[in-house]
Length: 311
Ligand code: NDP
Image (tube, rainbow, N blue to C red; front, side):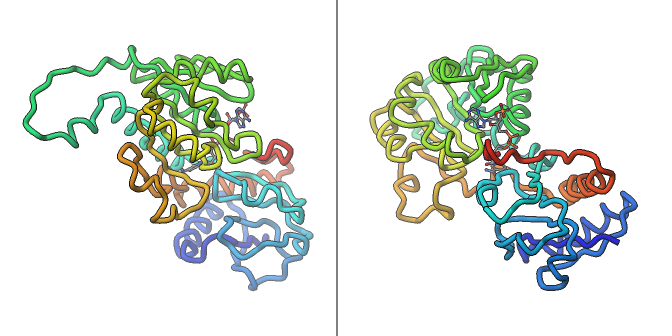
Protein backbone atom coordinates (compact mmCIF):
# COMPACT_ATOMS: atom_id res chain seq x y z
CA UNK A 1 0.00 0.00 0.00
CA UNK A 2 1.36 3.40 -1.02
CA UNK A 3 1.46 6.41 1.27
CA UNK A 4 0.53 9.65 -0.47
CA UNK A 5 0.98 12.93 1.37
CA UNK A 6 -1.41 15.77 0.54
CA UNK A 7 0.67 18.93 0.99
CA UNK A 8 -1.74 21.32 -0.67
CA UNK A 9 -3.94 24.07 0.74
CA UNK A 10 -5.69 22.83 3.89
CA UNK A 11 -9.00 24.35 2.80
CA UNK A 12 -8.93 22.24 -0.38
CA UNK A 13 -8.41 18.91 1.45
CA UNK A 14 -12.18 18.21 1.72
CA UNK A 15 -12.33 18.49 -2.07
CA UNK A 16 -9.08 16.72 -2.96
CA UNK A 17 -9.48 13.85 -0.52
CA UNK A 18 -12.54 12.37 -2.29
CA UNK A 19 -11.23 13.31 -5.76
CA UNK A 20 -7.87 11.60 -5.19
CA UNK A 21 -9.52 8.59 -3.51
CA UNK A 22 -11.87 8.16 -6.48
CA UNK A 23 -9.04 8.47 -9.01
CA UNK A 24 -6.88 5.99 -7.08
CA UNK A 25 -9.78 3.50 -6.90
CA UNK A 26 -10.44 3.97 -10.62
CA UNK A 27 -6.78 3.19 -11.36
CA UNK A 28 -6.78 0.20 -8.97
CA UNK A 29 -4.01 1.68 -6.82
CA UNK A 30 -4.09 0.85 -3.12
CA UNK A 31 -2.94 3.87 -1.15
CA UNK A 32 -3.55 5.78 2.04
CA UNK A 33 -3.87 9.52 1.74
CA UNK A 34 -2.33 11.41 4.64
CA UNK A 35 -1.93 15.00 5.78
CA UNK A 36 1.37 16.47 7.04
CA UNK A 37 2.19 14.96 10.42
CA UNK A 38 0.07 11.84 9.86
CA UNK A 39 2.93 9.74 8.44
CA UNK A 40 6.69 9.72 8.95
CA UNK A 41 8.37 11.56 6.02
CA UNK A 42 10.49 8.48 5.24
CA UNK A 43 7.27 6.48 4.67
CA UNK A 44 5.85 8.81 2.02
CA UNK A 45 5.85 7.51 -1.57
CA UNK A 46 4.45 10.58 -3.36
CA UNK A 47 3.76 14.16 -2.37
CA UNK A 48 0.78 16.01 -3.85
CA UNK A 49 2.12 19.52 -3.60
CA UNK A 50 1.09 23.16 -3.66
CA UNK A 51 3.23 26.05 -2.38
CA UNK A 52 0.49 26.83 0.15
CA UNK A 53 1.19 23.53 1.98
CA UNK A 54 3.54 23.34 4.97
CA UNK A 55 6.41 21.22 3.53
CA UNK A 56 9.49 23.34 2.89
CA UNK A 57 12.25 20.80 3.49
CA UNK A 58 12.09 17.72 1.26
CA UNK A 59 15.26 16.13 2.73
CA UNK A 60 13.49 13.73 5.13
CA UNK A 61 11.30 12.34 2.32
CA UNK A 62 13.89 9.73 1.43
CA UNK A 63 11.45 7.25 -0.12
CA UNK A 64 9.45 9.80 -2.12
CA UNK A 65 9.45 9.00 -5.83
CA UNK A 66 7.94 12.27 -7.06
CA UNK A 67 6.55 15.59 -5.98
CA UNK A 68 3.37 16.18 -7.97
CA UNK A 69 2.38 19.83 -8.17
CA UNK A 70 -1.25 20.89 -8.24
CA UNK A 71 -0.15 24.15 -9.81
CA UNK A 72 1.03 24.73 -13.38
CA UNK A 73 3.55 27.34 -12.25
CA UNK A 74 6.40 25.89 -10.20
CA UNK A 75 8.58 28.96 -9.62
CA UNK A 76 8.07 28.76 -5.86
CA UNK A 77 9.47 25.24 -5.57
CA UNK A 78 11.75 24.61 -8.55
CA UNK A 79 14.73 26.31 -6.89
CA UNK A 80 14.29 24.57 -3.51
CA UNK A 81 17.73 23.04 -2.90
CA UNK A 82 16.27 20.28 -0.67
CA UNK A 83 14.08 19.03 -3.51
CA UNK A 84 16.03 16.25 -5.19
CA UNK A 85 13.00 14.15 -6.10
CA UNK A 86 11.43 14.46 -9.60
CA UNK A 87 9.03 17.40 -9.78
CA UNK A 88 5.99 17.35 -12.08
CA UNK A 89 3.83 20.36 -12.82
CA UNK A 90 0.08 20.34 -13.38
CA UNK A 91 -1.33 20.04 -16.87
CA UNK A 92 -5.06 19.71 -16.42
CA UNK A 93 -7.99 19.95 -18.79
CA UNK A 94 -9.78 22.16 -16.26
CA UNK A 95 -6.88 24.62 -16.22
CA UNK A 96 -6.73 24.54 -19.99
CA UNK A 97 -10.44 25.17 -20.45
CA UNK A 98 -10.34 28.05 -17.96
CA UNK A 99 -7.39 29.68 -19.68
CA UNK A 100 -8.99 29.31 -23.11
CA UNK A 101 -12.16 30.99 -21.84
CA UNK A 102 -10.39 33.87 -20.05
CA UNK A 103 -8.08 34.57 -22.98
CA UNK A 104 -10.75 34.25 -25.66
CA UNK A 105 -13.12 36.46 -23.69
CA UNK A 106 -10.57 39.23 -23.25
CA UNK A 107 -9.27 38.95 -26.81
CA UNK A 108 -12.84 39.34 -28.11
CA UNK A 109 -13.40 42.23 -25.72
CA UNK A 110 -10.34 44.04 -27.12
CA UNK A 111 -11.00 43.02 -30.71
CA UNK A 112 -14.61 44.22 -30.68
CA UNK A 113 -13.77 47.36 -28.69
CA UNK A 114 -16.41 46.39 -26.15
CA UNK A 115 -15.13 48.78 -23.46
CA UNK A 116 -15.99 51.76 -25.61
CA UNK A 117 -19.65 50.80 -25.74
CA UNK A 118 -19.92 49.46 -22.21
CA UNK A 119 -18.40 52.64 -20.77
CA UNK A 120 -19.95 55.16 -23.16
CA UNK A 121 -23.74 55.09 -23.11
CA UNK A 122 -23.98 58.87 -23.45
CA UNK A 123 -26.42 58.84 -26.36
CA UNK A 124 -23.83 59.50 -29.06
CA UNK A 125 -24.52 57.40 -32.17
CA UNK A 126 -21.21 56.77 -33.97
CA UNK A 127 -21.15 53.76 -36.25
CA UNK A 128 -17.70 52.23 -36.57
CA UNK A 129 -17.90 48.48 -37.12
CA UNK A 130 -14.97 46.52 -35.71
CA UNK A 131 -12.75 44.60 -38.12
CA UNK A 132 -13.26 40.88 -38.57
CA UNK A 133 -10.99 38.36 -36.87
CA UNK A 134 -8.87 37.62 -39.99
CA UNK A 135 -7.91 41.30 -39.98
CA UNK A 136 -6.67 41.14 -36.37
CA UNK A 137 -3.21 39.94 -35.36
CA UNK A 138 -3.00 38.23 -31.98
CA UNK A 139 0.35 37.12 -30.58
CA UNK A 140 0.82 34.66 -27.75
CA UNK A 141 4.10 34.59 -25.85
CA UNK A 142 4.45 31.02 -24.60
CA UNK A 143 3.11 28.11 -26.65
CA UNK A 144 3.09 25.47 -23.94
CA UNK A 145 0.12 23.48 -22.69
CA UNK A 146 -1.95 26.61 -22.10
CA UNK A 147 -0.59 28.99 -24.73
CA UNK A 148 -0.97 26.41 -27.50
CA UNK A 149 -4.55 25.64 -26.44
CA UNK A 150 -5.43 29.34 -26.58
CA UNK A 151 -3.63 29.76 -29.91
CA UNK A 152 -5.61 26.90 -31.45
CA UNK A 153 -8.90 28.32 -30.23
CA UNK A 154 -8.15 31.84 -31.48
CA UNK A 155 -7.00 30.45 -34.83
CA UNK A 156 -10.24 28.47 -35.08
CA UNK A 157 -12.13 31.76 -34.63
CA UNK A 158 -10.26 33.14 -37.61
CA UNK A 159 -7.72 35.43 -35.91
CA UNK A 160 -4.26 35.81 -37.39
CA UNK A 161 -2.37 34.06 -34.62
CA UNK A 162 1.37 34.02 -33.99
CA UNK A 163 3.11 32.41 -31.06
CA UNK A 164 6.56 32.72 -29.57
CA UNK A 165 8.30 30.04 -27.57
CA UNK A 166 11.79 28.83 -26.77
CA UNK A 167 11.54 26.04 -29.35
CA UNK A 168 9.60 26.25 -32.65
CA UNK A 169 6.19 24.54 -32.80
CA UNK A 170 3.94 23.13 -35.48
CA UNK A 171 0.43 24.27 -34.76
CA UNK A 172 -2.21 24.47 -37.48
CA UNK A 173 -3.12 28.08 -38.20
CA UNK A 174 -0.42 29.50 -35.93
CA UNK A 175 2.76 31.19 -37.10
CA UNK A 176 5.43 29.88 -34.73
CA UNK A 177 8.35 32.15 -33.84
CA UNK A 178 11.28 31.68 -31.50
CA UNK A 179 14.53 33.29 -30.46
CA UNK A 180 15.40 36.98 -30.15
CA UNK A 181 14.56 37.76 -33.78
CA UNK A 182 11.31 35.86 -33.42
CA UNK A 183 10.38 37.95 -30.41
CA UNK A 184 11.04 41.16 -32.27
CA UNK A 185 8.88 39.98 -35.18
CA UNK A 186 6.14 38.81 -32.82
CA UNK A 187 6.00 42.09 -30.93
CA UNK A 188 5.96 44.14 -34.13
CA UNK A 189 2.71 42.47 -35.24
CA UNK A 190 1.02 42.18 -31.83
CA UNK A 191 -2.17 44.21 -31.95
CA UNK A 192 -3.27 42.03 -29.05
CA UNK A 193 -0.48 40.39 -27.03
CA UNK A 194 -1.17 37.53 -24.64
CA UNK A 195 1.62 36.39 -22.33
CA UNK A 196 1.36 32.87 -20.95
CA UNK A 197 4.98 32.35 -19.98
CA UNK A 198 6.31 30.75 -16.80
CA UNK A 199 8.17 32.80 -14.18
CA UNK A 200 11.87 32.18 -14.78
CA UNK A 201 14.94 34.42 -14.72
CA UNK A 202 14.80 34.52 -18.52
CA UNK A 203 11.19 35.71 -18.71
CA UNK A 204 11.60 38.37 -16.02
CA UNK A 205 10.97 41.88 -17.41
CA UNK A 206 10.66 40.50 -20.92
CA UNK A 207 8.12 43.26 -21.51
CA UNK A 208 10.11 46.38 -20.68
CA UNK A 209 10.45 49.90 -22.10
CA UNK A 210 12.42 48.65 -25.09
CA UNK A 211 10.19 45.72 -26.03
CA UNK A 212 6.93 47.60 -25.37
CA UNK A 213 8.17 50.24 -27.81
CA UNK A 214 8.47 47.53 -30.50
CA UNK A 215 4.72 46.87 -30.41
CA UNK A 216 2.20 48.65 -32.62
CA UNK A 217 0.99 51.90 -31.04
CA UNK A 218 -2.18 51.35 -29.02
CA UNK A 219 -1.69 47.57 -28.69
CA UNK A 220 -3.52 45.66 -25.97
CA UNK A 221 -1.71 43.42 -23.49
CA UNK A 222 -3.32 40.49 -21.68
CA UNK A 223 -1.25 38.80 -19.00
CA UNK A 224 -2.65 35.62 -17.50
CA UNK A 225 0.85 34.07 -17.17
CA UNK A 226 3.04 35.49 -14.43
CA UNK A 227 3.59 39.04 -13.15
CA UNK A 228 7.39 38.93 -13.37
CA UNK A 229 7.18 39.07 -17.19
CA UNK A 230 6.15 42.73 -17.11
CA UNK A 231 8.26 45.65 -15.92
CA UNK A 232 5.37 47.42 -14.19
CA UNK A 233 6.85 50.93 -14.32
CA UNK A 234 7.55 50.55 -18.02
CA UNK A 235 4.01 49.34 -18.69
CA UNK A 236 2.49 52.23 -16.72
CA UNK A 237 4.64 54.69 -18.69
CA UNK A 238 3.65 53.04 -21.98
CA UNK A 239 -0.04 53.21 -21.01
CA UNK A 240 0.30 56.88 -20.10
CA UNK A 241 2.01 57.71 -23.38
CA UNK A 242 -0.58 55.79 -25.42
CA UNK A 243 2.00 53.33 -26.74
CA UNK A 244 -0.05 50.62 -25.03
CA UNK A 245 -3.80 51.14 -25.32
CA UNK A 246 -5.05 48.83 -22.60
CA UNK A 247 -3.77 46.09 -20.31
CA UNK A 248 -5.75 43.35 -18.63
CA UNK A 249 -3.65 41.73 -15.95
CA UNK A 250 -4.46 38.62 -13.93
CA UNK A 251 -1.09 38.04 -12.27
CA UNK A 252 1.28 40.30 -10.37
CA UNK A 253 4.66 40.32 -8.66
CA UNK A 254 2.88 40.74 -5.35
CA UNK A 255 -0.46 38.99 -4.84
CA UNK A 256 -2.94 40.05 -3.68
CA UNK A 257 -2.17 43.23 -5.62
CA UNK A 258 -1.99 45.94 -2.90
CA UNK A 259 -4.99 48.34 -2.95
CA UNK A 260 -2.66 51.32 -3.44
CA UNK A 261 -1.05 49.85 -6.57
CA UNK A 262 -1.47 52.22 -9.55
CA UNK A 263 -2.89 49.41 -11.68
CA UNK A 264 -6.14 49.44 -9.71
CA UNK A 265 -6.84 53.11 -10.44
CA UNK A 266 -5.50 53.28 -13.98
CA UNK A 267 -8.35 53.97 -16.45
CA UNK A 268 -6.89 51.65 -19.06
CA UNK A 269 -5.96 48.73 -16.85
CA UNK A 270 -8.25 45.91 -15.84
CA UNK A 271 -7.13 43.85 -12.87
CA UNK A 272 -8.51 40.36 -12.44
CA UNK A 273 -7.46 38.59 -9.21
CA UNK A 274 -5.50 35.58 -10.52
CA UNK A 275 -8.62 33.79 -11.68
CA UNK A 276 -7.77 33.17 -15.33
CA UNK A 277 -7.49 29.44 -14.77
CA UNK A 278 -7.74 27.16 -11.79
CA UNK A 279 -6.77 23.54 -11.32
CA UNK A 280 -10.02 21.56 -11.16
CA UNK A 281 -9.78 18.80 -8.54
CA UNK A 282 -11.65 16.02 -10.34
CA UNK A 283 -9.60 16.19 -13.54
CA UNK A 284 -6.37 17.12 -11.71
CA UNK A 285 -6.70 14.10 -9.40
CA UNK A 286 -6.67 11.83 -12.46
CA UNK A 287 -3.50 13.54 -13.72
CA UNK A 288 -1.83 13.05 -10.32
CA UNK A 289 -2.87 9.41 -10.16
CA UNK A 290 -1.69 8.73 -13.71
CA UNK A 291 1.75 9.93 -12.65
CA UNK A 292 1.63 7.68 -9.58
CA UNK A 293 0.71 4.77 -11.83
CA UNK A 294 3.63 5.64 -14.08
CA UNK A 295 5.98 5.89 -11.13
CA UNK A 296 4.94 2.45 -9.92
CA UNK A 297 5.20 0.96 -13.42
CA UNK A 298 8.67 2.44 -13.96
CA UNK A 299 7.38 4.62 -16.81
CA UNK A 300 8.52 8.23 -17.33
CA UNK A 301 6.49 10.86 -15.49
CA UNK A 302 4.25 13.23 -17.41
CA UNK A 303 4.93 16.98 -17.29
CA UNK A 304 8.27 16.64 -15.54
CA UNK A 305 9.89 19.96 -14.73
CA UNK A 306 13.33 20.69 -16.14
CA UNK A 307 15.18 22.26 -13.21
CA UNK A 308 17.72 23.97 -15.44
CA UNK A 309 15.05 25.68 -17.55
CA UNK A 310 12.99 26.42 -14.44
CA UNK A 311 9.66 25.23 -15.84
P1 NDP B 1 4.33 25.19 -20.25
O1 NDP B 1 5.56 24.86 -19.48
O2 NDP B 1 3.57 24.09 -20.92
O3 NDP B 1 4.66 26.27 -21.38
C1 NDP B 1 5.53 27.31 -21.20
C2 NDP B 1 5.77 27.97 -22.55
O4 NDP B 1 6.63 29.09 -22.37
C3 NDP B 1 6.49 27.03 -23.52
O5 NDP B 1 6.00 27.20 -24.82
C4 NDP B 1 7.94 27.50 -23.43
O6 NDP B 1 8.69 27.25 -24.60
C5 NDP B 1 7.74 28.97 -23.25
N1 NDP B 1 8.92 29.59 -22.65
C6 NDP B 1 9.41 29.42 -21.41
N2 NDP B 1 10.53 30.15 -21.23
C7 NDP B 1 10.74 30.79 -22.39
C8 NDP B 1 11.73 31.69 -22.85
N3 NDP B 1 12.73 32.07 -22.05
N4 NDP B 1 11.65 32.15 -24.10
C9 NDP B 1 10.65 31.76 -24.92
N5 NDP B 1 9.66 30.91 -24.55
C10 NDP B 1 9.72 30.43 -23.31
O7 NDP B 1 3.39 25.98 -19.26
P2 NDP B 1 1.81 26.16 -19.30
O8 NDP B 1 1.41 26.55 -20.66
O9 NDP B 1 1.14 25.00 -18.67
O10 NDP B 1 1.64 27.38 -18.28
C11 NDP B 1 2.29 28.63 -18.53
C12 NDP B 1 2.22 29.48 -17.29
O11 NDP B 1 0.89 29.97 -17.09
C13 NDP B 1 2.54 28.75 -15.99
O12 NDP B 1 3.93 28.67 -15.81
C14 NDP B 1 1.88 29.63 -14.96
O13 NDP B 1 2.83 30.55 -14.48
C15 NDP B 1 0.79 30.37 -15.74
N6 NDP B 1 -0.55 30.03 -15.24
C16 NDP B 1 -1.38 31.03 -14.82
C17 NDP B 1 -2.64 30.74 -14.36
C18 NDP B 1 -3.59 31.81 -13.95
O14 NDP B 1 -4.65 31.53 -13.40
N7 NDP B 1 -3.30 33.07 -14.18
C19 NDP B 1 -3.13 29.35 -14.27
C20 NDP B 1 -2.18 28.39 -14.77
C21 NDP B 1 -0.95 28.72 -15.23
P3 NDP B 1 8.98 25.73 -25.07
O15 NDP B 1 7.66 25.17 -25.49
O16 NDP B 1 9.90 25.88 -26.21
O17 NDP B 1 9.57 25.03 -23.89
